[in-house]
Image (cartoon, rainbow, N blue to C red; front, side, top):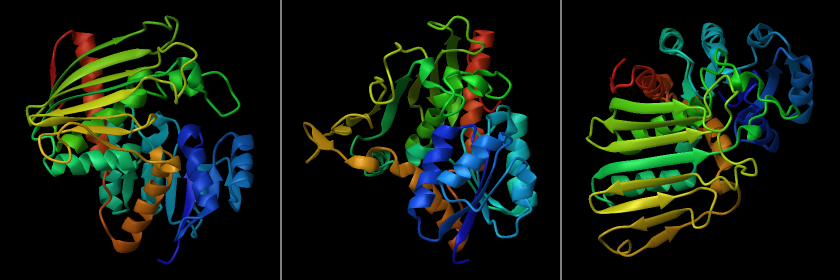
Length: 353
């Protein structure tokens, strides 16, 4: 296959759909945007015009009927993922699936089964796997720079006002719908970090203790705060704090999110929004004392959107297995759902659920 021709289903998570459209418009080798589908006609039409798609539809099945589409970027609201991926798989279309994989393990299993039956490729859209700072941290851990990883914390705080249903709509819409989104401030970013710890520590989760709350925005129908302590099967202990409860003036470049990875012989501190992005302390040169890594421009974050598309294209053309895949999406969601269950039962929850 010389060129992988893409469709987009659902513009609901516009934070991811639009940057991918922009990179496809700029040009990605062996990739081309062909069509977009969204039940909101205006958004589909405007997206197609902005990013040079040939066609737009309000019925996603018309997009899947096209023989000239090879792969689909699914960025619909989360509870629609299972329906959309099943339809893509039945039509023989490969998938780049937005996070979280689903809102329930039942739907996540539907997605895993659909991919297995059809043998299409499915890449989960966990952008942290593609940001140079995080790739560097993974490399350093595998090289043993900090010894055996034993603990970590990932914390992010943004205000709920940063969450918009659409680029031109100031309200939260589906993001705060407990059915469509599956939760609020905790699942929204927290599922990135449960996946991150599985990947970074090369270990599955064993148990979870968590608390979920509305600390600032009391009237939200979903939580604005969540924190979970995860014990990994490797013995490491990881903390995820994911929230929408920051002060109103915070934004993505001002939010005090941070990550610390601690090992038996050192630590890695990093923050993709600040310079330097990574600070490493180890017991051997050049890391004894402090050593710093930094990146400039789009490589600090935005390049992840391009890299995910490039990786799926590579997998399709070379027959490689995507990573992270649907099973990784299932496992990351399982940890998040265990955290909600821990809060509800006021006790530790053991995996698998």
